[in-house]
Amino acid sequence: MHVAQVNFLSAPVDIPPEALLTHWSTLGDVADAVASAGTRVSVVQVAPYQHRMTRGAVDYHFVPITPDDGGRRLATVLGDLGVDVVHANGLGFARQTHEVSRYRPDLPIVFQDHADRAPPWWRRAQWRRWYAVAAGVSFTAQEQARPFVDAKLFGPRTLQFSIPESSCLFNPGSREAARVETHMHGDPCLLWIGHLVPGKDPLAMLEGVAQASERLPDLHVWCVFGTSPLLEKMQRRIAADPRLAGRVHLMGSVPHARIERLMQAADIFVSASHRESSGYALLEAMACGTIPVVTDIPSFRAITGHGAVGRLWPVGDPARLADALVAVATGAPARRAVRARFDEELSPAVLGRRWTDAYAQVIEASRVGTS
Image 1 (tube, helix red, strand yellow):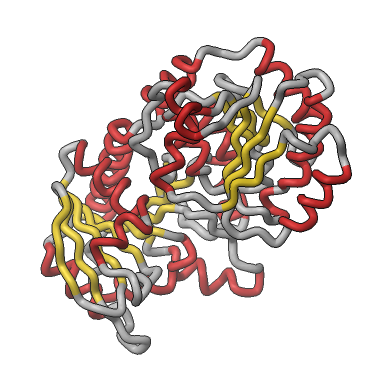
Image 2 (tube, one colour; image 1 turned 180 degrees about the vertical axis):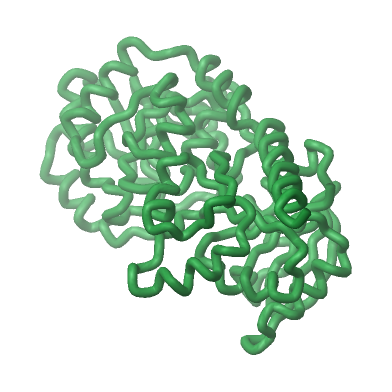
C-alpha cells in the first residue's frame, strides 16, 4: 500500500526543505510513524519551489502550484507516484482537495482534522460538495466531529476515525539529571507550554496555581511560551499576588530540542486550553512520563483515557485546577503509568498501525462503492 500525505499549506520560502522537517516536526513524524507500520509513504508538500528528497523510508516531493492550477499539477504528481490513497492534511483545504479529485476521482481520500472549524451555515452547501470526495475523515476525538456531522457536511458513507494528530520520540530520561541541567525546581514542579493568548487561558492557570500554593507551599511553575499578547497582564497579576511572586518563572521561547529536558524535569504538565485539535505538548509530556493536569476538553479526554492518568479539570475553573494540582501532588500516579499509557495508545508505532488500518478501510470501502 502506498499513501500520499498531502500538505496544502505552503512551505515558507525562507526555510530550505531539509530544515522544514525540523521547523514543522510533525510533517515527518506522522510519515515516519506510518512507514514504520510497513506502508510506503510519500509526502507531497505545496511549496514555492520544486525539490525532491528522501529521509529514512519516506520520499518528500515539494511541488509549486499556481492559483489557477485547479489541482491539475498535484493530480499529475499523485498519478506519477502511483499512490493507492491520499491523506489530506486539514479539513480547511476541502476546496483544494476537491480540485485534485476532479483529475483523479479513482483515488480514495481521507482527511485529517487539524483544529479546523465547520464553515458558517451560509457556506455549507458548497463545502458539502467539496467534502463529498472524502472516503474517510479523522479527528483525535469523535466528539470533535460533531459540528461537522450535525451540519451534515459528510456523506453517509464517509468513514470516521479517532486517531491522535501525531506522536513523538521523547522519553522519560532521568528527572534528577534534567533538573540539574535545566535548574528547574519545585515540589511539585509544574511546566506550562503554550502561547499566552485567551484560548490557552494562562490567567486561569495563574489563579489555580495561586490557590493551590496555599496547600502546596513549595509549588513552582515554569512557563514556556511563544506568542504572548497577555504577557504584561500576567506580569501584573504575578506582581500583585504574594502567592505567585517568586514561584512563577516566565521562560519565554525555547528551542524545541530543549522541551524534552524540561518535560523530564517537571512533575506535572499543566494546561488551561479551551480547545485543542490534539495537544502536541500533552503528547510530549506523556512520552516523558510527566503527569498531565489538563482541561476537560475532547482531545485531552481522548489522549489521557478520560483522565485515567493525571487529572482533568473544567475549562475556566481555577478552583478545580487547584484541587487537581493538590490531588496529583499528594497522591500522584507513578510516572511509569503515564508512559505506559503513551506506549499503549499514543506511541509512533501505534499511530502508524492505526493510520495503516484506516487507509486499508477507505481503500476497501472505495472498491466496494465502485463495484
